[in-house]
Image (tube, rainbow, N blue to C red; front, side):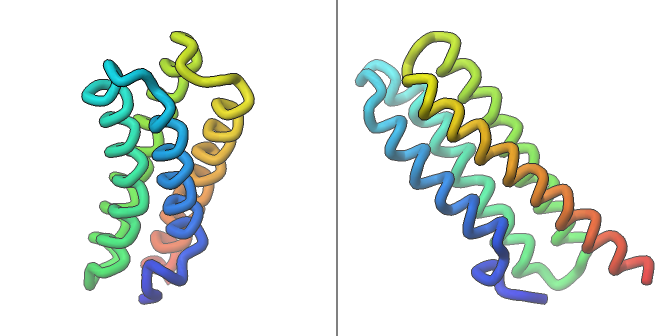
Length: 121
């Protein structure tokens, strides 16, 4: 098993977390315990679950944590959509984040398929 630091999807998820921190840093102070906290936790959860899964001994465990990371990506995507609808960030920043979440989600699905197929070889 590779180290999580060797996985491109982990690297992209880490970059996404940094971008979410930057974006939410500009949110109004009354959002600190609401959307800011929710988005940061979801973003960090993506990379964290990839790392935790990669450290597990079995492919089954790895796949489980990749699915959890995928769920966190969907959660973050929903939160980004809410931010867009209530006007907490400009459209360009929203589009960049939505695009990155989409790329990461596709990468996670591909990695899940790859690990599952490896099990059947």
